[in-house]
Image (cartoon, rainbow, N blue to C red):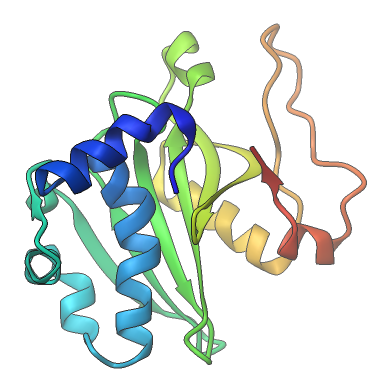
Length: 196
């Protein structure tokens, strides 16, 4: 279920009865909450109030200790009828902790989950920002787009991915102009991801 380097995170969560930040950001939010919302078992209030998630976790025998109360959630209703829940997490300290996440529901309440993760490049360069990734079931997705640690910028980049528009990828270490993703059609940008 988790990448090999996060096997300990999985064991720490499910063997000790506490949820840690990694498991919360990459399992609970993209895999537990969305199906409950789609089925109508939880409503908008529960989706936008992290304290309500503790009730869901307790039903599963898991307690939270990483700081659910230190994050915020905003619901956005888009012009096309789609819905997004925008999560703002405490500032990440270690890769792959997230700055933000967007849980995007289409009109059928099918969802995609996008994250802005702190990455090693930004740690090395001491910059605020990261790489746009996501999670689908137990598969970690990498969209290849680099983004500043700014919510508005992240929202624009995610919307570009949804719309099939190109985003910029990694800036070079020597400060050259950022390079764009090439040889990807709008359809591929929408549906295909770099997976590692």
